[in-house]
Every structure is written in C-alpha cells, then in structure tokens.
Image (cartoon, rainbow, N blue to C red; front, side, top):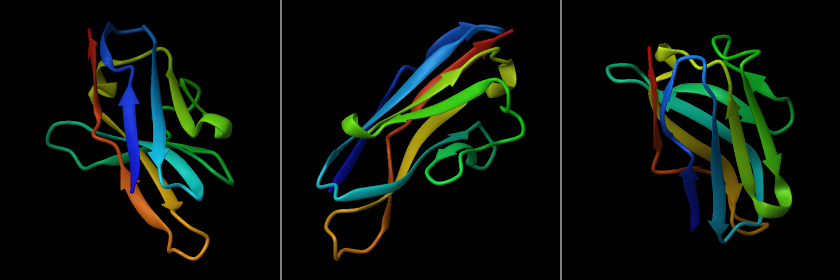
Length: 119
C-alpha cells in the first residue's frame, strides 16, 4: 500500500504564505505524477498543480503557487504565496503510482490538510 501524509496547512491572513508538504511511503516502485487538489465547501475537488512530465497549474493559482518535488524523499511541496480567501479549502495530495514493475498504475490520496485564509 502507498500512504500519503500531508502537512503544513493552517490559518493565515490574506496576502500571506504557506508551504504544504506531502510525503509518500510504503510499497512504491514508481510514481508518475504527484499533484495537489483542493476542495472548498460545497464545491467539487479541483486540480491545483501537477508535477510529472509537464507541470501544470490551475489558472486561479498561476504566478502565486509553485509545486516542487524531491524524488529522493518521495515528497512533493506546494509553496503558496499571495494567498486569498478564495484559496480556503482542504488540500489533498495525490499520486499515480505502482507498487511493483508489473502492477498497474493506481490513484492514491492523502487525508487532506485544511488551509484557511482570513480576509
């Protein structure tokens, strides 16, 4: 099994910064992508940033958020600057991974970390 553990969420004022971390552990042969999603109350979960191949960002966070990855540590980070109240959400780490060379690619999710931005 692959476990993803997020950390770094919290409460900050608008204009502030936070850095999220997500560490993957367990039976990992390879991770093709590591991504951050978020879900605000009453809204669908949306992709924030993806690392793997081409790095992609949601339009709403371009220029403010930066995703980075430390493959040696199986860790992905999300540096969030110039935070806005509309960034308030639970942020989830996601990976597409396989446990062995012959096993299929599967989706794995972290438990989520709350990010709250006050105005």
